[in-house]
Amino acid sequence: MDSSNDEAVDIIITNVVATFRTRCHLNLRTIALEGINVIYKPEVGKVLMKLRKPRITASIWSSGKIICTGATSEDEAKLGARRLARCLQKLGFKVRFSAFKVVNVLAVCSMPFSIHLVDFTKNNRPIASYEPELHPAATYRIKNIKATVQVFSTGSLTITGPNVQNVATAVEQVYPLLFECRKPLCK
Image (tube, rainbow, N blue to C red; front, side):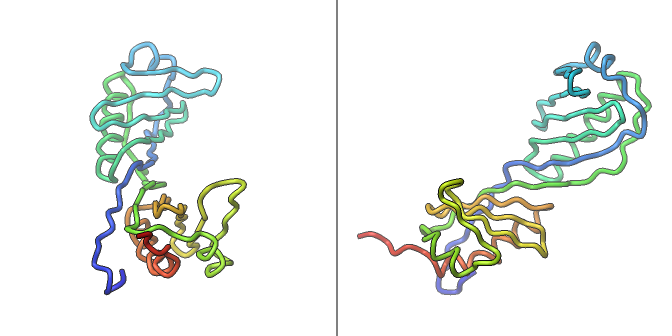
């Protein structure tokens, strides 16, 4: 961050998406009939199961692959995935929790200043793009850490990345570029 500006920027994680495998075939009809907080989607070939604590929603396929969404930290995602595996074990499946992986992290952040998006895009042309007819934010893609930052003129950022460390790195990397393109304060 800039040394002349000592304001801290809070990064709030809003969603963590994780996957894991059960290493067994799952009968979706059995899960739908005997499970709790379940929505059966036979036309798509999956079951949605919701947990209250931690608050996650899981998409369960008969192959044994499960995708968990809605957690607010990587630890919470792992805890929810393990609780889901335990629920499936209680329904009589020989579930073995394996191949857990956090695949996506969505976070939001607010800069203490507004941003002039046209200047930001011109200064960072190959990496940043801004199409005001399509979306109100400028998109800044960081290839080496596989993160994408949506920059709004109000100073709000939406960051997507493969893990929490990459999201924090993306904010640190984009902050000086945003600071250069801040709008002057109105008095």
